[in-house]
Length: 139
Image 1 (cartoon, rainbow, N blue to C red):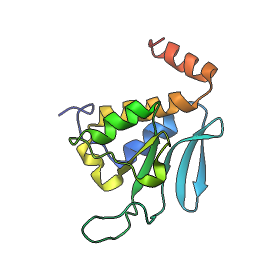
Image 2 (image 1 turned 180 degrees about the vertical axis):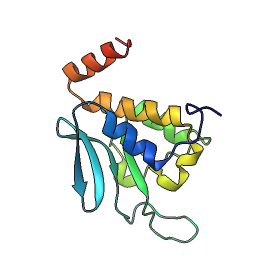
Image 3 (image 1 turned 30 degrees about the vertical axis):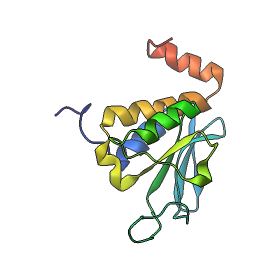
Image 4 (image 1 turned 90 degrees about the vertical axis):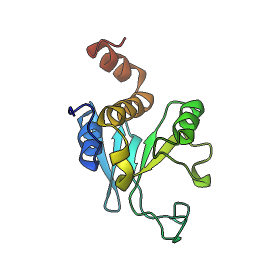
């Protein structure tokens, strides 16, 4: 197994989100909120009543919110039963997906990297996004 194929970890979330250009890290309580240009693109959420274990009713305390570019991308991610992404009614109309930190091992690192990079791209200014895409041969 290569670094590219290995299961994703919470450390990967921090490394990738924090490694994108022009990122600042705000705090929501004790949880980090990764922002570009004052816009959040990845954040760790406090336990909330809308995200609970269906068997026990216990609130999930490890939910990560990741922005997506479109409603169709969100639907594709949350409807894919092979992936641990989900949403709640609280996030209806919000361009983001949720994933539990304890379920990240179901996501290949490369997929998580792409998801976080795409989150940054959809929240960064056009100029910053254009520069990043050009630097990575994607423009």
